[in-house]
Amino acid sequence: MVVPTIKGRTKKDSLALVAAVKAGLTNSAWPVKTAPQLPAAILPTKRIVAYYGNPLSKRMGILGELPPDQMLARLDKEVAAWTKADPTHPVQPALHLIAVVAQGSPGRDGKYRLRMTDSLINMVYDWAQKKNAILFLDVQVALSTVQEEVPRLVPFLQKPNVMLGLDPEFSMKSGDKPGSKIGTMSSSDVNYAINLLSGLVKQYNLPPKVLVVHRFTRKMLTDSKGIKLDPRVQVVINMDGWGQPWLKYDSYRAYVEAEPVQFTGFKLFYNNDTKKGDPLLTPPEVLMLNPKPLYIQYQ
Image 1 (tube, rainbow, N blue to C red):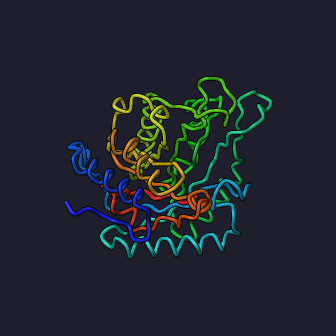
Image 2 (cartoon, rainbow, N blue to C red):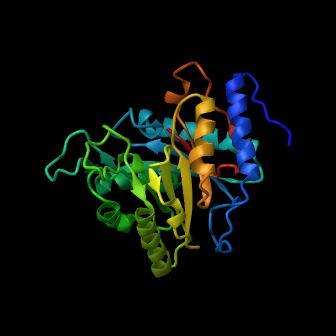
């Protein structure tokens, strides 16, 4: 193989990239063999580029850092950059709203999570509509459960352009306070979400749904081999870690490429990835990976 190098990056960055690419090329499980793509499925024909966060907080991601019009204009620029980097995959823009937010205080029911109001979700949905974008509703269950939180979102998930995200980092099965340690989800949690989404697709004759599961440690997702794929639901394991390029490449190799599920994602942090002076990874740099991520998230 031709060894990739990333101009202006450190030797450690390049070595990590080489290791990640080699691992992907030699892993015979990629691409994952699945049922034929159903009509109107987004992946793998298109690449999703999403802006993540919550409009109630400037600290949770780009979706809430800027006024809506400025945020959407910046998303347009990222969409254009990814389109230029890989014209073979048209870009589907997206907004990724944290619809259930882990909290530092227990709240009245002791679940340490705050559910966003329907009006706030509808507001962000309207923003997405302006750009023909899809909307992801992300769930940080804290001391609640996927089985308790996701059904409340069904009225939104019934829409053809609303998808789902699960964040194991804040799934505190241990009973600890969110943020005190990294949480975990199991294949049974993911399968519950897959089954619920598949049922909605079948019941309402919807296009296939996309389910994003965040991951940056091994224990965040246990028994990934137990995830049961369904052609009505496209599962993305999203490398959600932040840091220097070498660390992100290592995490992608160790926690996403090494345990194939279906499709892969890669998260880019405007602030945290650049804390030590590294410029943000560019679309061409991310696209050197194998398998190439088809879901890109900016926080």
